[in-house]
Image (tube, rainbow, N blue to C red; front, top):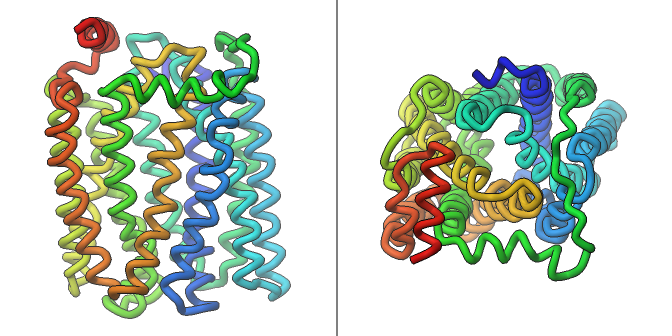
Length: 411
């Protein structure tokens, strides 16, 4: 249904190509860093460096997304990503790669993603009619996961020939993403005319804090991703535990996304129509269980199975959260709310990677992953207790959800 609309098709292609490029790039960077230094902590620093701009600028990025045309913001961010990819390519070809140089480039990549994320999330409801929004969310998630499957997989294969081949391909993909973004014609965004004040900048954060459903959904994903950043340690598992080399590393990265893609694709055909809150909580608990199994596994095939399961569970969580946040939030607030969501959920991937790198350095790789999985299951149980409104969410139909939420607000 969502693909009936030309603007959504252009957006979907732009996002898929962009995510494909980013994941290829980060896969190559992670591998390159571990080959340069051999330290688990440095893999964590790769994630932390990307998160730092989110943490410093997310409130500004959300305000920008509500005060300026989101399409233009997206084009600017893709242009900066192109420059970062060119820098990685040049550095690798000339043999001048160093850990500090890589971190410096990742800062600029993080800045681009900080401003791009809220603009991308907030523009989706403008591209399709309200009745097609859930389908658009499912296909956006499906495309996102498909790109994340292909990115690490292709990068893992290409790394055998050299990281420069990955970075060269990334430059081309970013150019294609920019071209698709340019084709988006929608101009229905409600531009916020409120003055840019501290109170206005913090409005998205205040909006979320006052709404139990949204803070519960975002907080649940935050802690799950923060504690479950085991994928940052995949180079170590591939090299030192499973002994499968660069090709196996690519397969491990890709299998996580294959599970997520399968889950997202399933939701495009069979969306969640009831007990959405309980489904979200169960999905996060299954995600934690998958992390534990992966952490203790010494079998390549068992590890692949665990990554597939936790990927599928993750896609369910993303689907429910995106529907809840975007439906409840008015358009002139979506940029700021999406920015807060991005820093607490999207950017927490990078913090989770840092946490995994640090705890692996302290406790060892396997204990760090297992403890993260146990923590994720605990958080799912805790949130089921302290956020009853989230637990009681049933239908994700926009009209039903808004009506029920307004009743909850009135209580």
